[in-house]
Image (cartoon, rainbow, N blue to C red; front, top):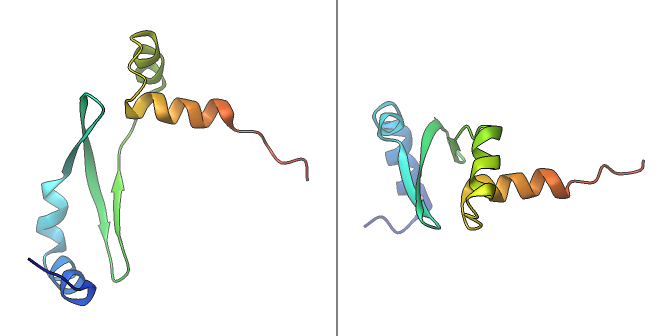
Length: 84
């Protein structure tokens, strides 16, 4: 097991093309969410996932309150532009 960030970074950067092909699946609520590893650099790893608006509405209608689609929908709904 790698226990320091320098070794972790070096391995990630060295194998970034192959690691990017792996993707990432995480259990969020009752759903498995798959993310694409879209970038590996010297400072961080970037993951991406597209969530369609239809998915947000369907998840809300199905009362799946602990899923990622509903969490993103809530961020959008709660956003208030600053008055500056």
